[in-house]
Length: 429
Ligand code: UD1
Image 1 (cartoon, protein in one colour):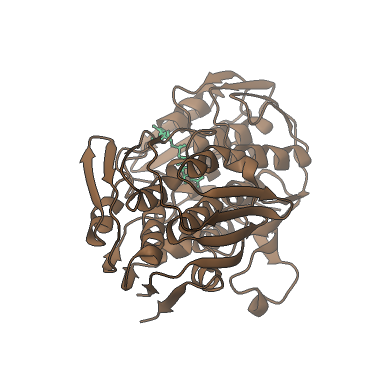
Image 2 (cartoon, rainbow, N blue to C red):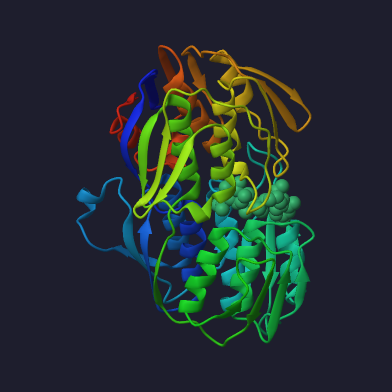
């Protein structure tokens, strides 16, 4: 299994190109199931999760082709990919595939809307908590779907098309918003989704669906109105830059020190997190080509944060921010409100010398003046990258094990960081 070796202590100087957002690309790829025409997506990141979803969509009958440079030259770079679901050959998403990537459960929305049926494996728990699917079931039932749960599968049917309805999410969910919005595009009549997720990835999906002929209003606010249409067509659409990758590298610069241009990043996609970073003493300078992040000399000020749905501080940056706070000049409190078990990085950061205590859903971080490199590992994507960031600032050598988590969500991580002067390499085994 590959590992990443880091020798900490270097400042980061230079530029890092920001990739297309994983969490936008996945639902956009799934939207290709809604039409028999070709959906062309630009700026699709080259990540393990994207490759896995291509396999899953292929199982339903989606053909794909990669535009532009030859595949051998594309290794590791964002691509333009055409997806065509001319014939859906299978409306079942089996356990073997869904269990490998939770977001693949989202195929339930388009399959049900277009084919009138879907049999999708329950995704099961994952490292960051139980992650139930009750909102998807409730919401699809509100649109008229018949749903049974049997032998680990959700069997859903809508023989005479889904019907538009008003649905109020009891809790904000990004995935359930994606799925109900996709399903409602082909329903009969009007759907109003209230307390919908406002994340930029929801807006990016809505814009793509609109380009495909859907009638959607209000994406990016908590009320989304969808007027169903009979069919959708193909379209060409661009994946937004990854706000989590942007925030992660911004925190790496804040922690290691230096001056880096995050090329192609959009400040409006993560203003809440950038405001917090500015309070730590990091300079955040939006420029035409992206965001410049600088911290020279000054220490890191402690800041308390609580994770919240967009536009609040994202849970997907919580672990990285905790990494930064381990070296702040004082005490900070980090409260996780989205997932119940998202503190696996705490023990591993402690291996590097961090002082963190847990009180329920709050981590109390007592900043230390230095971290010391150590072998570490993590069990999810964002936790893993927090260890990379901490390793960049720690004295000596840090080896991060179980790198496959990083490959799920960070395109060319080592190359991007070493291009800015970090000593970081992949050890293959
Ligand atoms: C997405 C992101 C993930 C991010 C999360 C929150 C993708 C591929 N993943 O995950 O990186 O951390 O948003 O910003 O985009 N919930 C229920 N019942 C449901 C569905 C969700 O209780 O039926 C709960 C979840 O357990 C969690 C909360 O709602 O506590 C928010 O989860 P949700 O927004 O659905 O996360 P995902 O869409 O899975």
